[in-house]
Image (cartoon, rainbow, N blue to C red; front, side, top):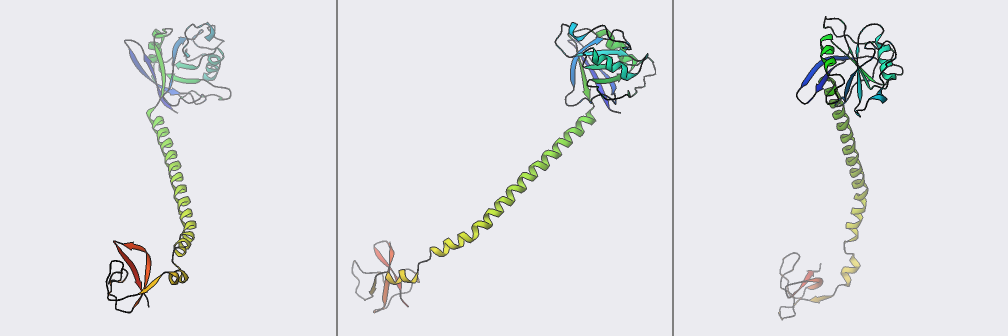
Length: 246
């Protein structure tokens, strides 16, 4: 049994009525359904309705107001649907105020159907046929809240799946690139043959403008006279940079 609300909105009036959706009709979802209310003829809809949707000049969705009794709820809703209406609002013919869940066979039922009290139906009758009045069938907050929670949960799962996929793809790429990075680092190391091919000189104590520094740029130790030095490709300041031979 699903509860909802019937809300009548006009220029100077807004009325809300409790209702219960029929268990054999499509559920009202989302923000609800909006239309214009008309009286069924005959009012109990136990025979084919004389008023047809094609005869209505207003372009809004037409809803039919029907009284309980005379035939089953299912018969009423099927005749309302056959006449082209998009919703059936059935009101009670008893003053006890107890709302009932209309039961029937759902096969072929495509329109919404709700049940309201007799007091609600008598008020709705006064506004039936007024094209400047909007009638809203609104689902209960509880149903809407469950829908929002379900959508949020599914969205969270989807986002988590995307993030997890991105993480594992990135991790796989890093693992594939690690051996290549190691090879690149090894490739940049200078071979012994290239080191031996570099020019060399014998260090002397005589310092001239084109002579090397007296201190090794690598180990920062002073040279001694007679040591053989390698001249590196790089130059710091105006001095040649050299490497001590072992």
